[in-house]
Length: 134
Image (cartoon, rainbow, N blue to C red; front, side, top):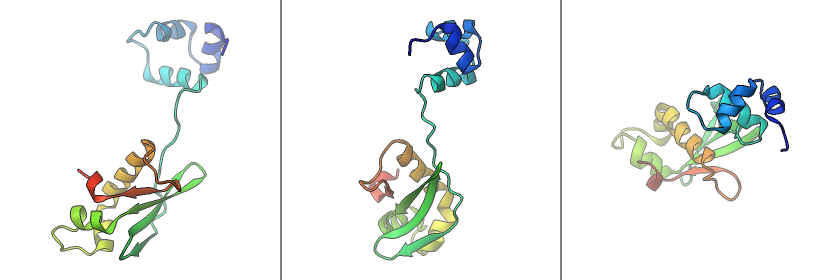
């Protein structure tokens, strides 16, 4: 980017010695400083997937569809019926919708992990399958 240490320090709001320590890969740099530097250099990924929408839909063939949000982008997420039955039905005592409601934080965490790892379907959605859950 053709920046001096002083310019980078100013943009990242850290000291010039911090930039020097960062370049030398010293271990005593604050994480917040390292993240600020990486942000300025365009080397950080601010993607996240949040789940504030409590709505979901159930299709007996497809499973449960629910929605996440990455900034202004709405992301369709789905857990297959097979995955719900195999991993969240508690030995067939819970129906799919009840299993989803009970285990929603775990299921959302699985969807978030797949999304952040770039494991999306061709349409950009996230699909959780039974063989992907450990």
